[in-house]
Image 1 (cartoon, rainbow, N blue to C red):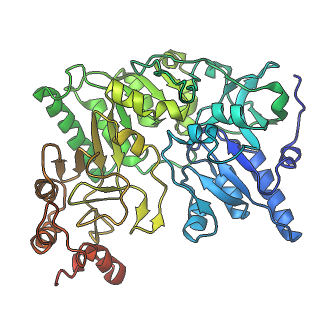
Image 2: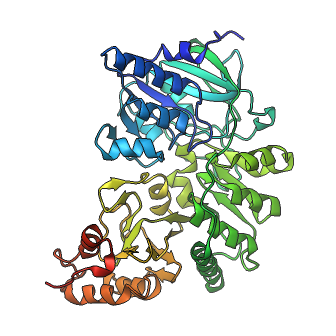
Image 3: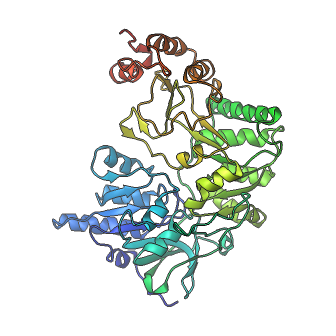
Length: 495
């Protein structure tokens, strides 16, 4: 190998205060695991010596505790984009200790190539192997890695010996040309390959290789499916069956996208057992353990993704079954989440909401409008361009004290123009072909919990007239009651 072999500490010495640093991966998989903690240790030493040390950190989506966790605990992040999900980092963002820019995931790579964020100083990338020509086999996610390798002045490589050689062929690396030279992306089915199985970097950029032996897969399991999420899954499945029977979806069905978490798993579990929905493909940004079961059973015939967000056990199971490897491809996030492809092949999107209002607006990122949860992620990429866009949430939370159906959302990530269907444990609210007041009646009747329906109807009665009935003094009454009384049922709707 022509590249210097470095320790993590030696690699960290190349990182200086104020640098733009890009990391590989998408969600926990594929992220570097030993160099970021060494950078955090360096930051602590610099701070102890009275010197400033913070970096601007760019990723594909959320990272892992080795990256966002260690660096945020060391107070080593000045700016972060485009998505996060670690409690420590979230705490610093909500405290205003660092700058965070919540971006649509499909846009991050091209915006960096366009020069919006300035130069990338160093990219830190986990790979299975790299040859002397700079061709590399990436890990269990792609994210924005191909663009980081293209834009970065220098690159640090982590070779993880836990990545098996059989991962070769699971990647489809395609970077579109920038305007005005961009052409259509040659993906017409979820299973189409558009690029190459390897990523590439100019060997002269490589500062060195750090050898690692770090476990693969998610260490924290998602919350198990319960009675409420199971009902949500069943409601989604029945809606899709009805769409096929009515002719609003083709009988051959359509590719689906599913977000992350226990609600998404509940929907996928329902799709696995359905006898009325034909085998289908997925065009999505992450695949979870439930997708592995769908691939094994043949219910899902192919999964296009950006990241194998499997548990460690499921990851090992996948690699032990080479017959599954022809059923999955990992792509860069600007391809897995690409609006052109999503619209053209007719993806059905399914994402979770923090709250929905009576007119179909969705808050998927901020609790009570001010406290960031994770971010918009890829939900916007899919929702705006989906064949049918579906949002999922339980109708109530926190021992009935919170209604997820509210008069007005406190933060709007997705407007009513993009939202077709809202599904809760109570039922399916179909917002298509309806004006705002018809939407409100549909949402109250089909999605809201019965204990909150009288309050929601009372708000509508008091909200005034217009195309949308809105009373500014009462619109946030549910949230005001939660803040002051700890219970939305105590909302004061007196004018």
